[in-house]
Structure formats: structure tokens, C-alpha cells
Amino acid sequence: MQGPDECVLASDIRALRKARGLTLAEIALKLGRSVGWVSQVERGLSTPSLSDLRAFAELFGVPISLFFSHDVPVESERGVVVRAGRRRTLGTSESGLVEELLSPDLGGSFEMVRSVFAPGAELKTEARRPTEEAGYVASGLFDIEISGVWHRLGEGDSFRFEGKPYRWRNPGAEPAVVIWVVSPPVY
Image 1: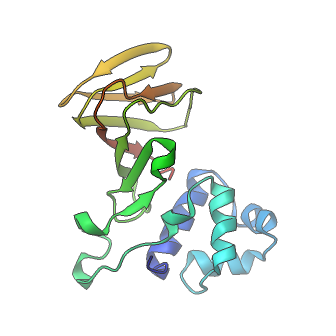
Image 2: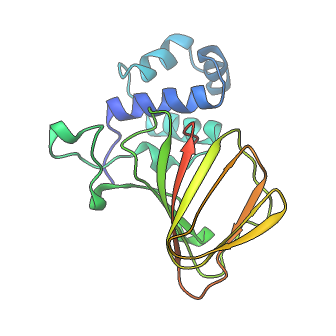
Image 3: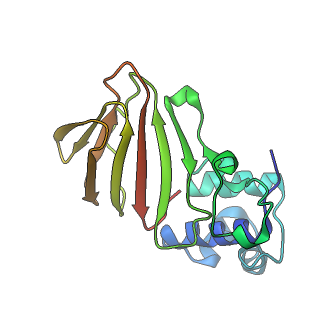
């Protein structure tokens, strides 16, 4: 696993803090660090240690793998292009869901994620985020419950909702692949 790229890392930490409505002072207090240090991390002037990254991941409720990017061999592609073999993986197959960040970073107004749902995988407890979300089923069967109503989607179908409670499941025998767009970025 490659180490964190300071520019991408700084941008992602700032985006996660803002998406959660937290101030530099609140982050510093929760991490037991100075406001100055957090500010330097967000500007790419300080590189957090692995234990600092674990603390950020726990604080933001994201997997630590989010903070590790793969090399971008062509400098002109940095922050613009994400090659198929160089996506950041978010999560493990143990949960029945593996996600890859398709966006170069979390600094924009939305994030795009490729989600692969294992056969039988499901989110049993309703989730709700202060976001607008849309998805496109690239392959497989995918059920999504939005505000208490279940929808069965197949390849080529899509959905959108904003700030509503949702759950999902893969009722099929094959993995379901969904391209998911979330605004603002929350990963």
C-alpha cells in the first residue's frame, strides 16, 4: 500500500471536516492536537503519522484506507484522472460491500464511488445522510428501500434521493455493481 499523498490527503481531510460541519478547533480538541497542527495538515504542510490517520478515520467514520492513494505516474493526471488499476479501495469484502473511489479526491462538490455488493449482502439498519445521492446499476440486481418503499433495479436502471432514510440489498446470485454519486462528499 502506498503512503498518503500530502496534497490529496490535505484536500480529503479538509473536505471530510467541512462535510461534517466541524471547525478546526473541534477537530483539534477531539484529536488532542493543536488547531495550528490540524490547519497545517489541511494545507499539506504537516504529514500526520499512521496513528494520527487512524484517529482522523475514526473521527470521520471512514476506513483508514481512504487516506492511502496510489501513485499517479503522470503528473498532469493528478486530481483529474483515476486509472482503473489505481483506485482507492474503501472497505472490505467481509461486509459484503467493496467500494472504490472513482473521484480523484473528496475536494469537489460530489464524490463518485463504484460499489460492488456481494450476493445476499444487505444494509439491515436504515441509513440517512444529509446528502443528495444517485446511483446507476451497471450489472446485477439491486434492491433499494427509500423512505420505506422498496425498489428492485436491474442493469441500466438508476435512482436518486435526497436526505431520506434508505437501505439496500443484493437479492441476486451475482454481485451487483452500482456507480454511486454523493453530494457533498461524505466518504
